[in-house]
Length: 127
Image 1 (cartoon, rainbow, N blue to C red):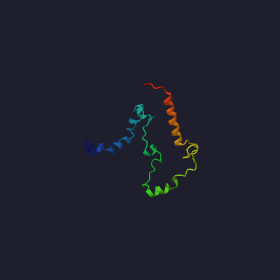
Image 2: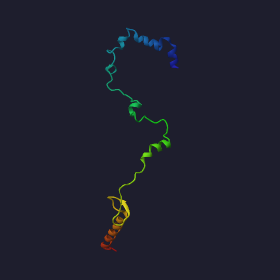
Image 3: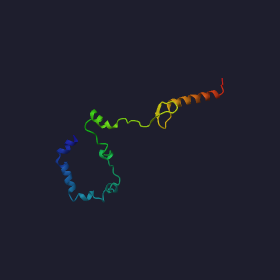
Image 4: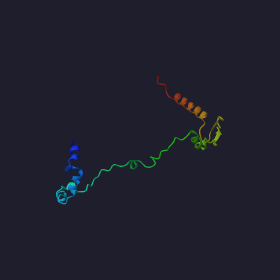
């Protein structure tokens, strides 16, 4: 209701108030001499809300328009197949195939079982 009264009264309209501030006789009342220093001094600290583009780098906002189809994925992955191993040799102990410079799994399991049995045999029985 106050806004209706404010707009209906021609003396108190917004345009009338702006024209009052433009009158030279009223301007000296609102000059820097009559206002406190904190109102006239420039604000050294300003709040600034960063936009969405400043928060995220441009690469984050680069999103594909459509889902990549299965056939396109398959075409791209065609050259990423499994490579043939060239370093397969036969174990000199048992003859099973193994990778060069690696231990044979059969020989290692046999050796580890014998070492564990020796350790168990040399330990005194506490029971």
